[in-house]
Each structure stands twice: as C-alpha cells, then as structure tokens.
Image 1: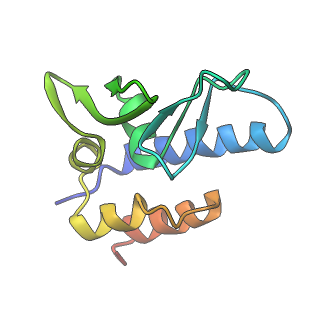
Image 2 (image 1 turned 45 degrees about the vertical axis):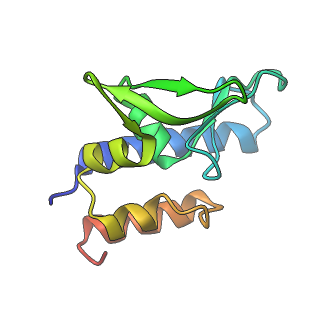
Length: 126
C-alpha cells in the first residue's frame, strides 16, 4: 500500500494552522484533538468541532460525519461509503495498519509528534 502523501501533508498543514491560531488565542471554528475522531462542542464559544488526524483527513476530503446525540462521531460517509472514521481515513490516506495505529494514536499531544510520524511514514521508516 502506498501512502497518499499529498493528503498526509495537507492534513498536517491544516492541523498546524489550527494549533498556531489556538496558541495565539485566536478562536477558529475547528480544532485538533487526537482524543476523538470527531467531536462537536456546542457549549464552547467559537469552537464548533475538533477532529483527530483521521477526522481532519476526512474533513478535508468532504466526508460527512455521523454525529451522535453526545456530539461524538465514530462513523462518517465518503463517496457513498459509510464506515468507521479510522477505517475510512486509513484507506483514504493509503496507510498500513501499523502506520494508521501510529498516526491516529491518542499519544500525540503535540503537532511536532504528529509531524515526526508523518515524516516516518513518508520516508518508509514506519
């Protein structure tokens, strides 16, 4: 399986931009949070939703998320296919199981950590 490097880079770029704004105290409608595939925030002003790396890749690819009453989404639809966010994103990004496990891990707390994982995937080290 060959990684979709353009989408990997575009997803990382989007997350980096959101984190730059957040660090500067600028509120934007969508954020990054590797704890949840997709999470609505109706009670937080200026933050409509947050997405993990997998969620951002699907968001940038015009997927539609199936949000539950609690504001969380585990499934999404893309090109008439509905599946778990992780599975759709793994296929879309062209990742192996090991690569998706590493990239979608909740252990990522910084953009730098994500960047290192993306670079490892691109270089074939993962």
